[in-house]
Length: 287
Image 1 (spheres, rainbow, N blue to C red):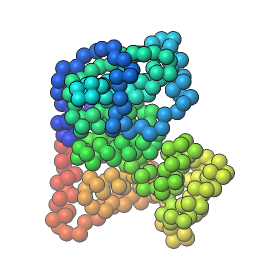
Image 2 (cartoon, rainbow, N blue to C red):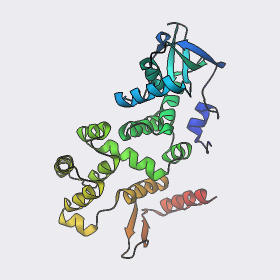
Image 3 (tube, rainbow, N blue to C red):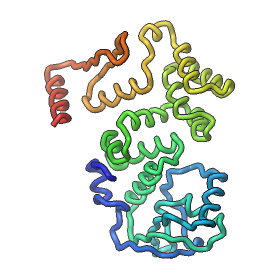
Image 4 (cartoon, one colour):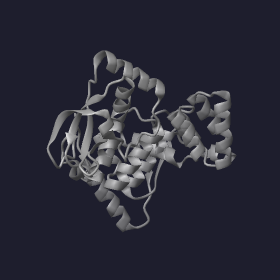
């Protein structure tokens, strides 16, 4: 069930799913050669094996969920809004038509939001595609991590952890996209701030086929003595700090205690006015 939605997406999507229609929508059978790809498709990788499996399922059971398209009168074509994987698999299955929900009019922002949200909520994007989807939604529609998390059914820490993957070097991101590394490996690499040490660890992880736990242990070993004294924070703790800093507008530290489950939360402020602002923000979250 849909949860609360930030004002940016709420205004855009009009409080309904499938959202965004500014004209009447209806179900039709459409010739596949009349359909063109979505300009805003967030998915960059379509695995052939997975498409073949879906095509076989469509042959046996038919298409269980229609695609969504919008009609382009200038081209006399239907542009895909969501469902490109189903569209491709239907082609592979040898069909010439596909069931589609047709919208008469969607603007560019609505099409982009629909494509991103549908893929994110289906949870079949790779971690980098998901992170880029989150980033695009936040930038285009002024949505906060909290609002996006509520809408997609994710915690704010999960959104933050996902976005942090985009700070990794491009070649590391490509390895996560291809499936050579998992999101957990990426988060372990983020524990190492030095770019050269991080790259060396990246090569070790691939060469030795390390598990995520082994990668995390190796990341801690790669830290300088000074960093080791400070104790490397786990990716979850770092994400929690970041999310609190964004919410409160100031530096936040989590210091874990000697006993599991105990520690200290430190919220920094520089002026009494800033302290008042932090207090107001905390009160607003509790109301």
